[in-house]
Image (cartoon, rainbow, N blue to C red; front, side, top):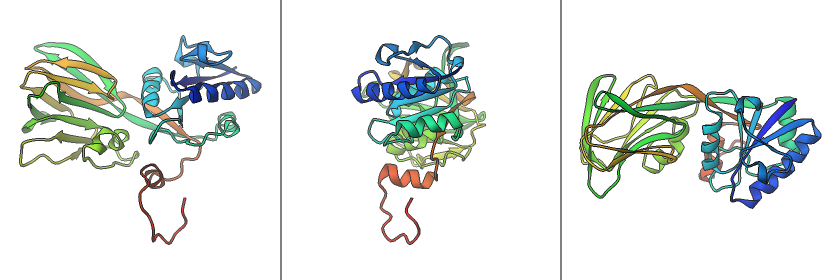
Length: 283
């Protein structure tokens, strides 16, 4: 029996309502329903092993998709995002249709994109005190009003020391999130790259940089009161002398699109970019 995992934002009534409509239709087509909140979805079972699921349908916004990535990371369970939030750049579907979604899953007529993840390790002396990963970005930022002093190295070579508010290391997926708001470039998802972006750096050279995803980025913390954040969800306090090593993760997360279209069209639609005067077809 096929299984679909419904990942629901727990405080949005619209998410639970649509999840139940989906669940009913999937059951009619002989699917078993799993959910992160089975009490919100009629007939759903609790997730015990995410590998039991064939698809994950996420109902919420980008934050819900980032939490879904925590569940499916390391397993080839594609995420179909249904946007019930605001901008919702990761979620394709903004005007969801139960029949359209179920039909796409039944026929496997879905485009899947494997998205790059970042991995970090925090070294304190000779010990690794913490490690984690991110789909969008890893940021190191001050946790007080005091300016941070960070020393950045790439592939074992020194790049620069900055007095700054922090540094963002973003994936192409994350280039339209926090890094974008901080002035970083938009990177198309199929481009294999990382974005490095200092925040409010007191330096002549403090521009965003695009580097190979195979680079090892090392950041030494020379100040007190700093913290590392992964996707804005997972946080660790840092101490003076800590070293953060950032590399490409061995795993990916699969984002699934029913009507993938073109990334340029997605960019225009999500950010409502002005395209008056264009003489071609409007997507």
